[in-house]
Length: 482
Ligand code: SAH
Ligand code: SF4
Ligand code: F3S
Image (tube, rainbow, N blue to C red; front, side, top):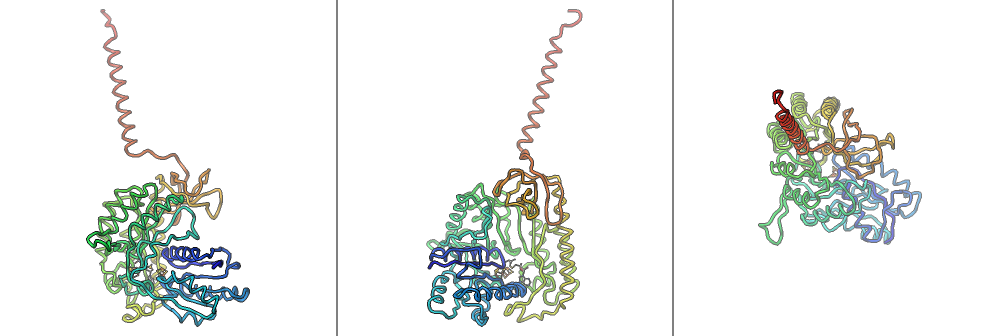
């Protein structure tokens, strides 16, 4: 099947990785990926259902694809991902869509495409699996900067947060075998990648049980350690942590391995225990703050980022104030902030009225964003004068004389390019900042604590030596009466 495939991706990092899995399955079947939509035989859009506006964007794109279908006869349009899973054949009523394939059915892509090309018609493949992890598929790194890559370590979600569509679109949680995860990381090292992000909806509940010996298992902190040891020169990140499941063991593993980046994305969603209970998050405000305390104690230089939902069902001004106060108490380094969007069939949509008026939701979200901008600025200002190891990702959008990259804490950084190239690790001293960006200059690698201690000892020894020489010289000096 020698077809040109164009893939557009919306939604989370997991979707970015899934598009790479889909590309790999199609390349194996003889297809090739094109970045040019006007050359495509097959247009795929990998979609997100997490909020209503994410779905609206995709529906808008389908109109654009209709024009491509008009221009060239035989072009096939397929919808992949969470929206395909949620809406199934309802999406096929849209005249522009030829097939829908859900997140667990990507292996059927070649068969579906070839059937539609040969016989015409429309198809839907949306069976959810309790075992599929695509562990044998080597993702084709489309849309990659060649420096940083994603590895999916698990799929699905069992948490059933009451507002969330993900458990419905991605099915039951399942963990991928650690051997194939480590092998994928090692392959990325060979291909020149310098950073990997381990992905799961709740990485803290990763648990692989050896099917041949069920007493043999690997949890998330053990997996982190395996990857850190196998790829000592690779930066390792992970996402997303869940406050109810994050254990100290993960923090200690992070502290032990310098190649695991000190950054935790720990979505809080709300600062009000009443809201958290209604959201079915299974932790209280106090539990969350305890986790933050543990991070600060075990990993003093770790950044903490979060997700916040404004205006969830029955949220009062008092609940909202508690979110603002928790944000201040934690001092998040950055946050993704959203207005609550009711999703069909979720527990919240069935049980709780979406009763916060739109105007109040927007007003609360704006207050949350304004506060986070202040907190992000404060957090960035603390970096001024410090030197960070930055992984160079590519030229700045504003000027090709400047490069961009990220600190271990995942802060975005801009600096004069000099002769650096993507993939280099450089040291950048931070000179100024905005709430979103650190700006600095490349400097020599700063001395480590041990090197500094050695220097102090060296200086001390030198001083003692000088004193001894002086005193010997004094003692040797002939006395006046000699
Ligand atoms: N598994 C991750 C991320 C899930 S989706 C986690 O548990 O944190 C990413 C974010 O989208 C969520 O953290 C939440 O803040 C937001 N989100 C999910 N459903 C939403 C909804 N119905 N309305 C508004 N925001 C939502
Ligand atoms: Fe959704 Fe909750 Fe699962 Fe995250 S943990 S994907 S918010 S159900
Ligand atoms: Fe991701 Fe959106 Fe699906 S956030 S899991 S693509 S609903």
